[in-house]
Image 1 (cartoon, one colour):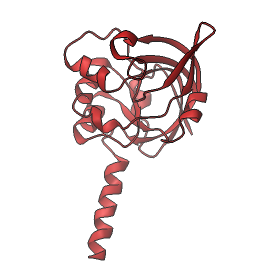
Image 2 (cartoon, rainbow, N blue to C red):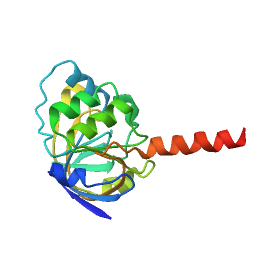
Image 3 (spheres, rainbow, N blue to C red):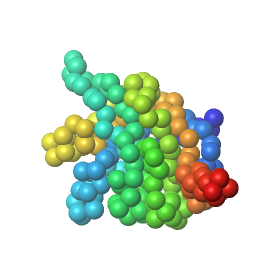
Length: 188
């Protein structure tokens, strides 16, 4: 397993290959549909993503004893962010996108151009993902978007996944689709 320490250097991210299992440590920020639309509509983003990670996640976070505690933090489907992600990658300097289900060719091209990878997190394991959150460092846009869509800032340790789209332009999702087309052609 390869380690990613955030903020990450572009050279280190470009060295990762599709299929690499990774363990992420550092500050990650959540962002879903409303966050991406907010960005696309030209609103300023007051979060520094340079060298960091954007996690497509709508966590369950509760306030207890004056602090935020993460109860569940599983990935949400990333394909919904395809219209926004290439521009976000170019403008933000983000190095890691985390989610489930992959993204499109335009996003893959932006990752290749700007030195970013897509990490496939395990769906259905929200409690396990939450266990890697060591501290909630803050939250942005809570009033604007509500708790599930807010931009949460999590300090994580040992957050695991697989590089499914790398900065070289390789997508495991495309490889699976290609292999499936070949297998189907043989069957027909």
